[in-house]
Length: 175
Image (cartoon, rainbow, N blue to C red; front, side, top):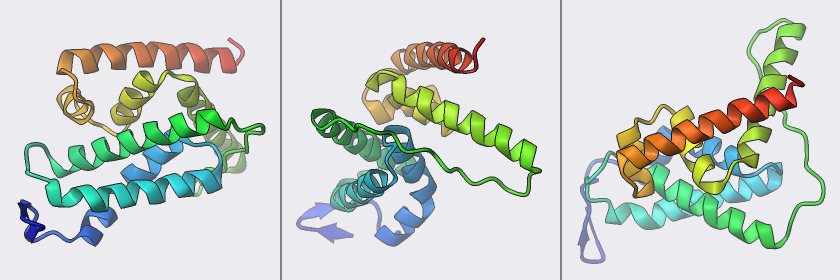
């Protein structure tokens, strides 16, 4: 694929295929950064647009998943920076669907997810970036590639983020 004189390694993959394949990843990254459902939807659209603009520049120096996640992370950080100037005065509740659980089990799962999302939003941006990618199953090498840091730095950030999340979730649970 040649676009505006730039050669992309994505000759047989369409933009729609990329978005379809990575839509869950993009949604979860947006969820980690934005509590308001309408703002989260706006963030997802911003991310998709950023991927569309950047895709022709993909050179295959990393996996496509890492490339897309890197774009999403950067867009989410920009979004948070912009939103910090206009703080949200009321946080909306999270409604995360569950699959075929008993009502009490569903309540426990929803509570854990809600507490995790709330705890993620309390992390510093650097810890939130690494924690989001860690929860997506990225390796330390992939996290480093995505964020432009070394694998060791990614590992340290992940360890710190995990410790902070454990502390925040324990405090939120009243331990």
